[in-house]
Amino acid sequence: MLDIIERRVRDKRVVTEELTLLQQAGRTRAPMADHRCDLCGECVAACPASAISIEGDWSVDAAKCLFCGDCVPVCPRDAISFSAEVPAVSQRSSLVLRRNVPLPELKLQLREEARKVLGRSLNIREVDAGSCNGCEVEVNSLSNPIYDLERFGIKFVASPRHADMLLVTGPVTRNMLPALLKTYRATPEPRLVAAMGTCAISGGPFGGTYATGNGVAEALPVDIFIPGCPPHPRTVVLALLEALGRL
Image 1 (cartoon, rainbow, N blue to C red):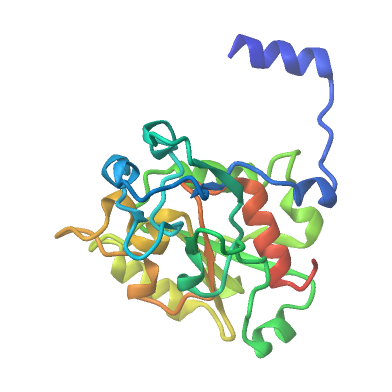
Image 2: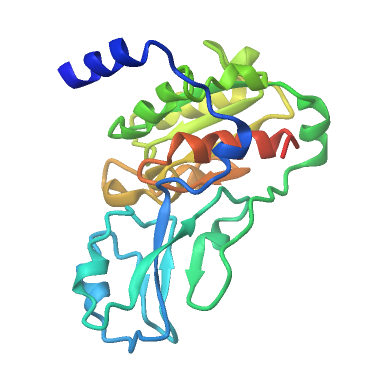
């Protein structure tokens, strides 16, 4: 804490990143195996999220991946390293990353009527559906002087009545499901739904229990999947800008 205060006093100002800098790779990097991988299975055993598969060929499900890196040091051939940043996608299946296959591009396929209504601004209602609050920390960062989401015409609102998009975090617990559905129904059409983080996309390490579901898609139609545990604020900003057709 003292180091942070000292740096603030010394620097005196915060420089807001340009959009070109935002587009550089951040922390949301998935592991990827190269040609040296012989499908021994050590990484499969080490993965705490069961995100890696060696059936047919090596692949990792970025929707389940915690981006922890536990698979990297256990590989006896040093065949696993971190890829470029995994972007937001419109299809859950696009997050299954395979060896020797290029990563998906940040090109969201949204409903045309939604794009027309959104124009160049976006109001977001965030719903915590049982997250560990890691994603909420990154959501808070979107409003700080570094990322400054409102400079792009994007802001968070208190009521779903004023929202264009629901940004949902967490695996959707049984007790939060009614509140999530009510919030969705209160959001005017054409509305968008974004699942932010591993838990919201697949349930993550908390999914599939008596008290939790396996992500937002079990309850609502999802338009945007934003991978990461938690996603870097940069990844979220770029996904929202792409939704507005600003990239």
